[in-house]
Length: 464
Image (cartoon, rainbow, N blue to C red; front, top):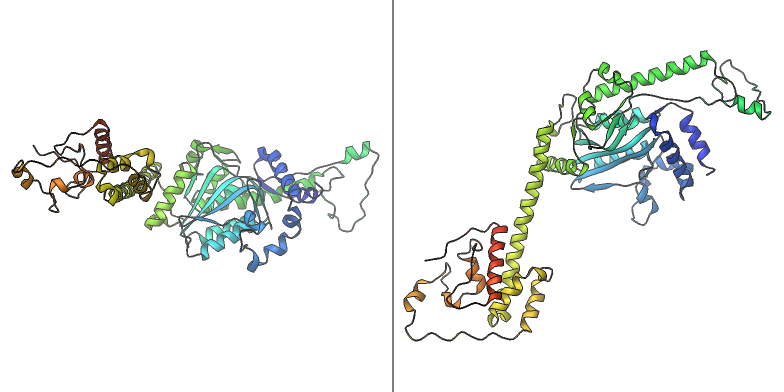
């Protein structure tokens, strides 16, 4: 892990926007980057590759960079992951471990330029990261949020630097039930090794010009005057942070400051105004996709945006799911009806009508396409034809029994009988055409009735 020392020093000797409780995760993430098989590319060529706009996005799937520069668009929504430690001048996204501000910026710009992208989702699960680069990126998100609809999702954590970016989309932020947001604060650390070096018999002597050249070094006790200057800088950064969140979320800055860098779970976060509603990432994405597809006016993300009330949000999610389910059932019913008709109207079914209907309605054969069922049917024995009626017998009844297309009942198939006048499958159809049916065929007719109910078929009373 020789490569982790300079990176760890870079991010720990400077001011950070990171949740205090994430120190171990922070270090583990840095070590993961340093131990990665592509660490030399991640750390050694970050600046040069970041500035190469023409070749930033891999053009082939077999390019190893594709996995670390994801560009995922689903249902018109670009999903930008903001996960792990957030790093400046880092043009990569390493799963749950680290995300670079440069990567986020370039993904955002590509999404804004991409005509296939109708909305942009920022998916957060991060303890925060570096100050450098964070406010600049937040301003770019804030400035672009009226160009296309944007949403922020805390799934499951958006702390400190991550929350700054989360707030930049405006009042369109959700949080999972187990999630957390906040930690609006700034931290830095001074590490002193003077006592340890003394015990080892090591003494460091600085030779320098300029009174403050070695202020805050790790080999001497930190003077109060130097500590005060560092504190002043931290306070200034804190002021920029609270002002940015207040602007982004249309809040009073005093209300942001009163959080005092606390972290909040889902219910408390709504109460202090840091998030707008609670919802799973899956439900939120369904709702966002539906809204974008509908082109609703409420998609604007301006500073006066009040967000979607929780009750309205929950109803919208339920409606979107119900609509999708209904559409799926409708398409399934149409496909099933076409499949049944293909089987029962085939040449093989003409001499095997009962067997054709049984095979068509057997749910265990649902995965077999209609042509395959017809082949199976052709290999089965032909059924015996019904004995012809005596001359004159039932003439009056047969003359009256014509369907909507003018077919005599005697020549109608089981499919025709089930479909009635063509408006839908008869609920409760039992195939009673005057002939005795065995138990297997009655079972088939029962299945047909169940199918009618499931697919929305209208019940029709049998003629008396």
